[in-house]
Every structure is written in structure tokens, then in C-alpha cells.
Amino acid sequence: MTQESQGYPVEGGDPACWAHLFDDLRHDIAGRDDIERLVVAFYRDAAMDDLLGPVFHAAHVDWSVHIPKLVDFWAWQLGGARGYEGNPLRAHEPAHARTPFRPEHYERWVELFVETVDAHFEGPVADAAKARAVRMAKALQRLLDGDAASGDEAVDVTFTTPPGDSPRH
Image (cartoon, rainbow, N blue to C red; front, side, top):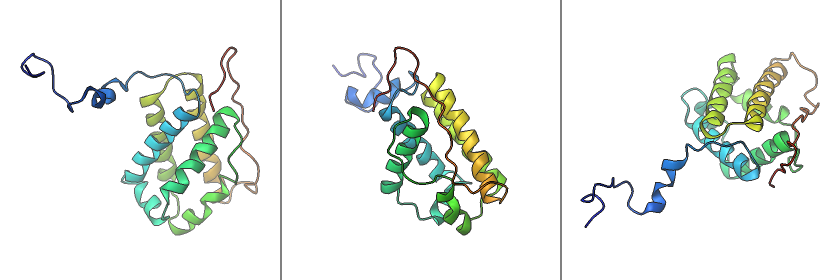
């Protein structure tokens, strides 16, 4: 007897292919693996977005190099893990020179980031990620519009691990 003749839905064959059906079990961002999952999901959607996609395309982003940097950046922002080197605000100046960022780019970036976090995670670290994204977008906009300080100031890390928890690295 086949699965279909027994009344079972046939989706993708091998039960291992069904993992996507259980992806709605949200939890808090708990370490580097979760951060990588967030970064990959977000930038996949951002790169294909009607508004943001052309900016990434014009910047000729090498995703195989950029994704690990983004994971390092968010691991630093959300857990204090050192590994990211560079200035996240100043790093966007070349892309802005090619395709000037407009207010709707920042708004869409934040909207998509928040949607991605909410689709995969919930909890205090997820909330901190969303708040940090809003602050980063505002700081980047001020810098690139010429309304900011030098851009050399670090974005402060305020995340603290809840008692009894330890971030996975």
C-alpha cells in the first residue's frame, strides 16, 4: 500500500523532506546557528525584493563572502561575540555611491528584517535583533545623509544573557 492509498498526504516523498512543515516552531535566537539562519533567510529575501534587490545587484555583492561577515556582525550585536571586523556604517558608502539609498530603502530593509525575525523567532533576543536593526538603519541613514558623526563610533552592544542561559558559539 502506498502512503496516498492509506490516506496520508504525499509531500516530497522521503519524510526527511517534510522538515519544512515543522519550521513554524519558533524559539528565541540562541546562538550562531540561529543567527546564520536569520541572516541567510533575510538576505535571500532582501536580494530578491523588488525595492532592495536592485541595490544589492548594483553593489555586486559576493554572497559567499558577505554572508559570513553578516553572521559575525549579528553574533557581535546580539551576543557580544568578537569576530566582526570593520565599520558596518562606513562599509555601506560604496553601495550608496552606486545606488543612493532613499528613505523607502531603509523602511523596507527594517520591515523585511522584522518580518524575517518574526517568521522564525520569538523572545527577548529576537526583540533585541529587531530593535538593533531599527537603530542601525537610522544610524546608517543619518551617516549617509551627512547628518551623523564620523561613523567610526561602534554601535553599542546591550544584550545580556538571561540568567541560566549561555549563548552557543
